[in-house]
Length: 64
Image 1 (cartoon, one colour):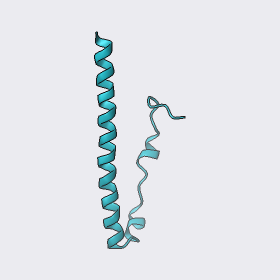
Image 2: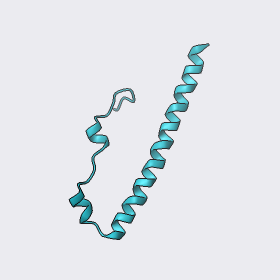
Image 3: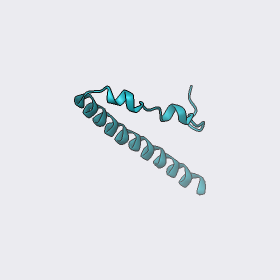
Image 4: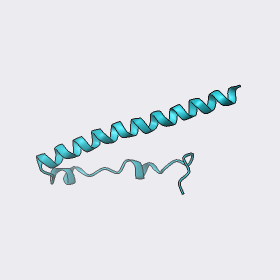
């Protein structure tokens, strides 16, 4: 089970292909990768917003 409070090692969060690996991809594959990465940014921001909202809600409850 994962603990939200335990940080994930950055090496796991930011693995990225080398330039050589990217150079092996076709233009179409690179375009697909860009779309996937853009989707990941949107998804990640959504999860972050949810966590920030939950934190704000908890903070409001405990300030009373």
